[in-house]
Image (cartoon, rainbow, N blue to C red; front, side):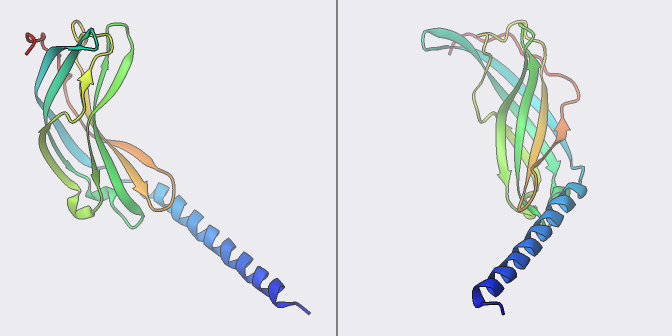
Length: 174
């Protein structure tokens, strides 16, 4: 009645349908499992230094910070890894809102999810308009991105500076 090819086709169609239903259930359940991690961000110092780059003067900001956060609630059975960023959020003199990543880290295991970092910016922090002069103070935020095995990426914020941190007057060229 049914040949071998027809039976194999029916079996693989059933198995692939079951697999897709299982993956959809996993993806939906990871959206339901939400956590609220807690962290603190403290900026210890900000220095602004002028630098000549490609015949253009541009200010560079060097930020020293202290981050403490417990991100273990974000790890569950569907969490592959976390991507952490420290972002400086400010509005420049032209009124453009900027969110600049100045530090990042990948956390792959729950055992490493308690973060305590005393460091400085990993990436160059410069103002596109060439100067931090008259730029309003910046907020600094510790943000995370949960990368699951299956499902949508989720984003959130674990900590933020309580008060905005002002850019000091620039030092003389080193």
